[in-house]
Length: 375
Image 1 (tube, rainbow, N blue to C red):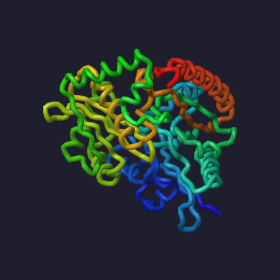
Image 2 (cartoon, one colour):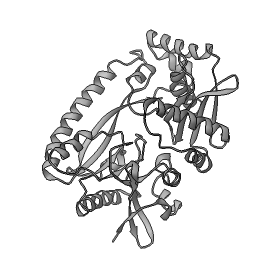
Image 3 (cartoon, helix red, strand yellow):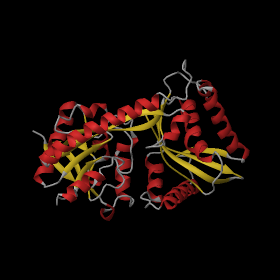
Image 4 (cartoon, rainbow, N blue to C red):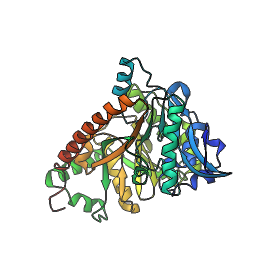
């Protein structure tokens, strides 16, 4: 019989044992990525992130695991439950702490219940609800899970969905010109004009992976990241040491797109590569130039995917402006178990209404595709 254990640091688990539980195609759930967040100052209790990973063991063998955190707020999750917390407070109840199974700061779909078979994934979900009740937590949440995880949840887990914008090469494009040819005239013209603006400003690009990135490259990218967070008044969580850790431990997964002018980087986008997918995570710039954001964050990524045979590009959460550039609506999912039966029943109705609205929204967006009808 499997034994459940809560692990407070991934340093307690051998990397090989953790990574044997997934296929390695998603970089965000690797031991190197998750332990790096812990080791290099990206997760702090005062920011609301306390590692409480769930593991299942048969003797000394790790058979299943879930990256999980005790949360004192909803910062860095991208599945918004502020209204839920407010409703709890109005009724004199504590919504925090809650238990979150997710990848911090990363609204990226992937495995969350790491196991070799479906029975162990179901066991993880069952243990989560039991521990949630026994420890007096309000809820447990599994954000941005994939298709294999979905079968592990019963009807007591509330289902939520949202829309992101993903690029998919399901039409066999071989080059950016092939890609452009699929757009209608208006959108094709707009993309060409945006790219021309960046070119006229003298912008070129240096694209490096973790093995090729210099200390100066990593420092420049981190500086751009800080610029973006400062501009929006948000607290930056990722440290330069974490980027250095990714370059050293996941060199083929880390990809930097550095916009260069006169030999100096003036903007950058940080991406991770896994399996057949490029994941855009952060961007920043020291200057504001026409077309720079779209070229750095989208068009360079699309060209990279076409060159390297990647079929998907997920550039991050939100942003209807991505639709005009060929990133189409995609449904992403999360599951939520609420301990309070009254709130669980009320939120089930709320979630159903929300899902219906989001599906209608996604259908409306898809009807405004920038691609030609025959493409």
